[in-house]
Picture (cartoon, rainbow, N blue to C red):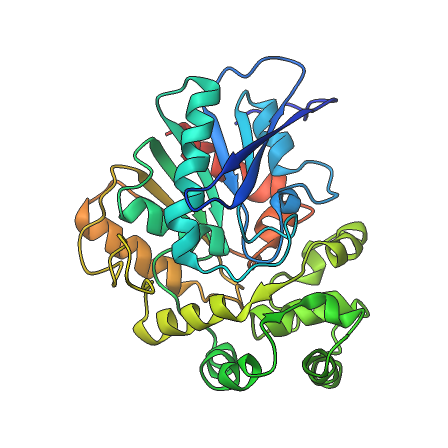
Length: 346
């Protein structure tokens, strides 16, 4: 592996695109001082964050790392991005409307016949739906972090999404980690109080709200020791609204054990019922300490894909990492990024 330092200056270009249902999204193309020599790589964020989740204030981000190694990096802001006004999205809408057009736009802008993708959390579930349904045939390699086809939660999270969700859904259309800073409604105040009573792991109110919203740990999406202090403060501005409509769909997926669509569209009702309609090779990543989706989620997805094409896909279980510190960790450029690069190079 190359130990080349990250480029000193990155050039950014925003490329708007319109999803198939008319929703306005965008891509951010990031390049260094030299023209890229390798294929385009699309980075897809999770729920209630935005594309710059891959650019935490660490010495070397994944974007830095890939650009330095010649990749043409594209960051997708899909409809779950907090760059856009809150909207009542679900996974089907992203899979059908956002990701296929994002891929088509990168192909058109670069002239590449095939591209690669690094996908995370609900960007990963929705992009996996696109791939399984045959909607992104231009993607040859997919590096998936945390969750993809199978959805196995810690017991506490499962109880929350199956039994507390109906109550919360009657009170609010969204959950928002920013309630740790400002709780404007009755529902917000109730959640904020509950979190303040249960979470004492740090003094960052958004960090604690994130753990309540997305997992069962203290904290849930990372280990504090994996983050530098600047990142721990920075993430306070990187989480906002997530619609209850999404959580309703995820509850159905959790009951089933794998992704299901909401029906009435071209996606299969059960995404695991038939072989995947894609030739893309998947590299499944999971932190062994993940308290959002348990590592067995990715193990089961690897086993499922492997059963349809033996020896083609790969699985990486990362010791000492959880959910998002895979990308935001202060040592991720040493521990994780070389593995991602190796999968992109295969």
